Length: 261
Image (cartoon, rainbow, N blue to C red; front, side, top):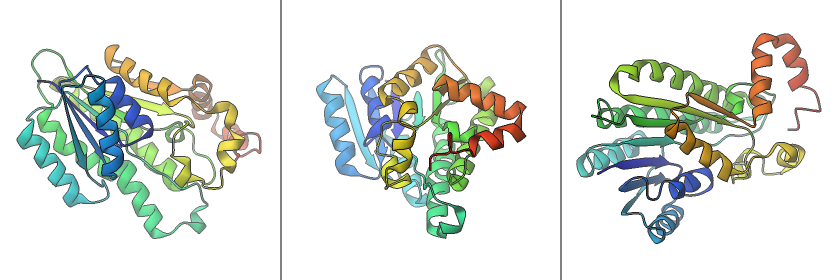
């Protein structure tokens, strides 16, 4: 039986990826902090024909919860065919205004917790016979282009991109494909924490991506074995230009036209 494990599956992009995968795998393992939201995602998937759904409450900032969740998956399911590392959060504030708790929570959720969980899933994924196993890491365009007020968030997402690139090389001979999705601003509840004022989201409304589109691109990355997807494309192109012309890039991304935080 095939198994997909999706973190941050209680709402937003994680829920939509789970729904799109509802018949692609025999088992869907939905992971998140909010049991009520996870169960709602599970009910939707079951109503659409998923064979088996398991909802596991797990806070990726808590190492004990990570270990217990991985232990359950190992003992009950044994193998994993798809891992989607989607859980994430951020605070759009100047570093001077951020608390240690906010910094720790950002890195634990977006990077270190994700790496630890992936480490515990890898033994269930390596050396599959036949079709390769897949890991999809949801990073961000912020992991390509940093802007003011994203110091911790951008740092974590830069880390996700780097982690994905290194893991991809390590897993080439172990029959695991690693894919990175770098979305720009999406129509999810991410901004309820990142920017409760709503100012940033309103300022970038013309760039906001439909999370359904990103979920479909995640599926496409597996179907076509795509290394990385940047969306919207104009932001992906901007990341390339930023790498080539960093001094000019600093001026542009810090201008009122681009930096709407």
